[in-house]
Image (cartoon, rainbow, N blue to C red; front, side, top):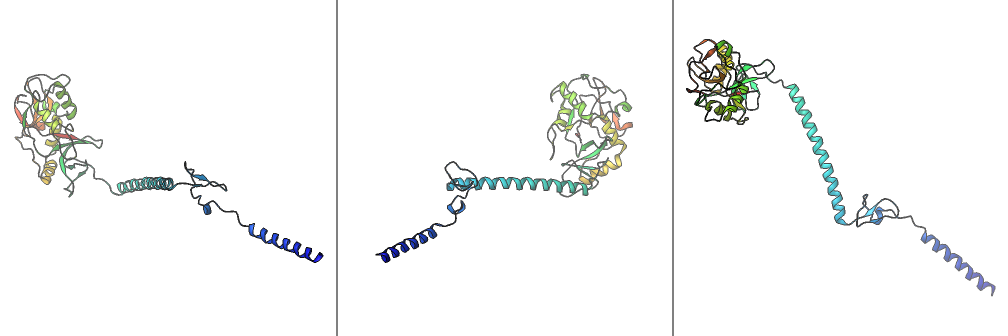
Length: 283
């Protein structure tokens, strides 16, 4: 009777030991259970062992797409900064030619002494203001027009009684605006024709009727300016070229170019006469 009881007790002890060994396994991780998202999602389930979620496939795709977009934007931003820096370095390493009287002015507002391939000439520099700016004359005349269809002394526009005083006027666009404010193109055809002129790189409204002093600057620098026009196939002024300026003499007369006279100016033609119009661009 004792022997049987002994064996039964031993069996029970062995059985408990085996059972305990089978239940001693490592705690599962979130990733091993499918909780792969580090961001909470509306339809997902949170891992009980940490900050991770099991999201639907669509939400995972959305998360990945958003991260890709964010990275792409950062890459684009950095690329733009690199390009900007490279351009600044290039600008520093490549000195730009200063515009001077006789320079060719291009549609990108750069200047050169000789014709450059791949660039479009739009004018020849005829005046420099001493501060890095100036004015360039269009390559050719755009036609002949009357200065005005009426004899009026335009309010606010200075009257120059002599060629020497008119030669000091370089306010091409300021004069042009005052004339246009006084009437439409049927009243002041020349200034409106200049205003409507445009080229590659410029728009209507950019060009003006030259002031008398611009023609005087041309007159004083004919060799350099004519050479510039010849390089680009432009038309030079001659001693008999009449081109209207925006400088007024009085209610009846306005100044025009005429290189046969002192200062390259003449005002013996009435405003009602037709003269060439050669627009000028300030830069």
